[in-house]
Image 1 (tube, rainbow over the protein chains, first blue to last red):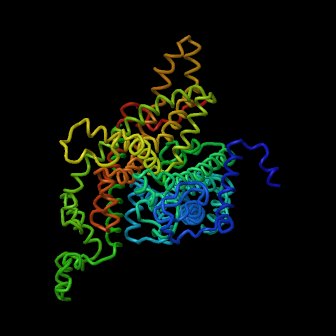
Image 2 (cartoon, rainbow over the protein chains, first blue to last red):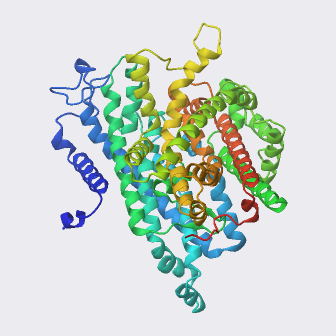
Length: 299
Length: 327
């Protein structure tokens, strides 16, 4: 059972799993946990401090913070997970193809990834989001399409080393079509790497959603999301209304921190060795959280 | 060494070329007809014939590669077009904003260098000490904290509650701009920018120092009776900071990404705030200009970091780094 699985894992991992489980459960059970509506304005009860009635207080138009936190979490987590799925699928195929093809095509594909990595992630997202326009769907696609580069690089490095293994060589000699080699052999064997990058990536997507919504370019203002709530809290901060900004921020930190700890642990369990990028001979910084920094941190 | 340098220059040029293509592609993906944009408020007077004439004059009816070449030629001459919103040349506005961003990013980098080297070395040589655990937890928490939220919390504490520090702009309005005033305005933004990324750098130095201290030459030095302090400062530190120089180059985009959001929160008059404004008002020509310039600055920074590494460590150019035999 789950409890048996948990035994023997490091304390931080246990805490992360419990925290994430709690957050997800609360988000799913939102209607049972709060009597309020996340969108309805209640001008009779603006700027209520946390306490009786409103657990975490109310915002500048009288909406219950706790309630918006729960419903907003749905949007934030949804964006985080869905955009990471786009990014992982695209990045994995891109990287596997690049590594499998080799030669000048590989060089070209990797330089394109390098060029995108060289641009500040936030700026790239701003531009594409400005072109695409606001909205949940656009946001998911934009975050997904600006965060696949690191996955591609890692998968490529993995594929390059797999290509030297006998079973792949045998497969090629037998005339297996390249599509089949990639989907049946190369990608499944790269799964540990993909799992780690994806896990940490979800955390960063959540952060990206928050940043873009905070800047007014993500989720439309009436819909609650953690980033949106912070945008609303920005003006109230000057009046000393700390509770509007404090709680959504804590929710983000808790979620992302748990995800990063889990990613770190997955890395330890799944890929004990360090991956060296054969092209550049550079350590592709795989020291725990280091695996994701060149992909931008999402903030 | 010459070959390595040439290779690096070539690679940088290729990346800059690809960045220019990405920018150009984004301009084309942007909605809106430039012909309409030119007419602006007098759109009612635009006749189809005028529209065709404008498109002809701007070369919009030519094949894409030709358009790209003409665009590139203009960019090379420092002509990034005009802002849709203010009508100012984009190049001038960018040049105006660059110093503020460089000041902010520069001070943050200094903070990061200072703190990450001290903490990285201390935790690298004493793994699993209480300081190590504390630093790791703090690093990871800071990495998981949205930078703008950290900014809001610091504004609340130091600006609103304590009233010690200014929370927006680069200098006090209605007063003569002095160095002290700018520094006071710089404190909060630079701390937030530095602290939201510092976790990565500390972990990097820590891993690097630890890895070096496990190598054979350290044991050999110890066996010869060299003092631990000498081993640490003259050998381990020197060798472990080499990849750090490279790493600093690689993380410039991360730094600038952070600056975008933080400048917006603190109303810091730099490129970041400028591009956020441009994005919310859909001023595409400004956005393309900033992304192109940022890309070029970053590629240059990477290149300089590579050159620095090459001079600091001949093994880099010889392609021998990372091939040491591990114990």
